[in-house]
Length: 421
Image 1 (spheres, rainbow, N blue to C red):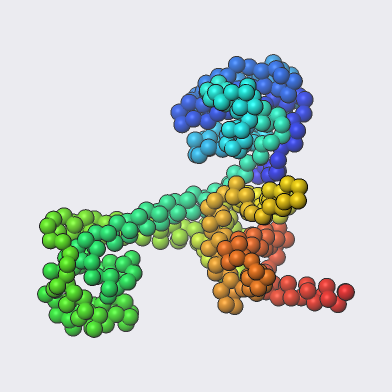
Image 2 (tube, helix red, strand yellow):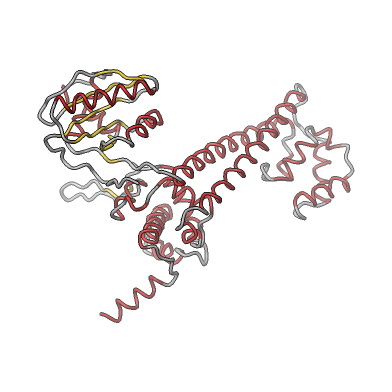
């Protein structure tokens, strides 16, 4: 696996060909230049094998023409459309970098003192940013890490779809049978989904025997719902204020949503099983899974988003990837508040945030750390972000040093410092 630094690209030296690409869904714009001002005209190429071969031919021609020793290819990080080009160029002797879209937006006006935006201007702006050394090298997961990233993205997408369907289901059930949720609060659990599938209308519930329905509910809810709940549900169904006009259409819509929910639940379960299998092939994953509060989904998501931990030389680099690096805006006597940049991978931050919630529970590994932050007056949300940073630092150190997690490490360290003092 090719070693790649993950920090800022240093100032581009002479003898380097800079290739800037403005990514599009079907058509891309390329531009070749050098630090001393030699350049080509912007050119087009498609997101096809022929188009990428044309790009590589242009790179080799420009490298020879301008007598360059090295090649840097940079693009603006905008969605998935650049991935085929990135994977194509990974096998070539070039350095790949990306440019923050926020930087291109700000440099665009500096370039010619105009807000003009054209397809020919954009790659020139990207090239100028690379010349200044303000581009970032990219981290591309490979092997099982890449597989985990795709699985995690797919799971995240299906979970969002499932949440949207549950919200639609709640609205439809409210129209048809508003009193349903007075008996069963959480509509996405197995028991209400079973009842809505078998008895799609209040009329179907109102004619049931309370003992029969009570036994069904008891089995499905594992004893949480019993006969008196069934009796309440039947009585409410008899006298519901739900609408009657078009009720058959609502019932059909509910049935279709229930089918989709079942399918999505099966897909998510299958994805989580694949995550567990893939984690079994990664040597350090059992050590991360041994951390109390981290499960298969969390560890798979973290590894998938970070990729190869060895590509990160320092802790701040991995914090920057997650967008958990701190910044403040200060001027003169005014000292700004420290915040996280949020300019990294949002899904990685989300995974770490939910993992942090698990680790601060009573007897959790970071419960004491969280409590100390709260006792010092820190707000709960900021304390959770601090715990996320702490957790990412622990995970990075464990993988870097190939070590196990020690629950009492901090207390032992404080004792050593106290004795030394």
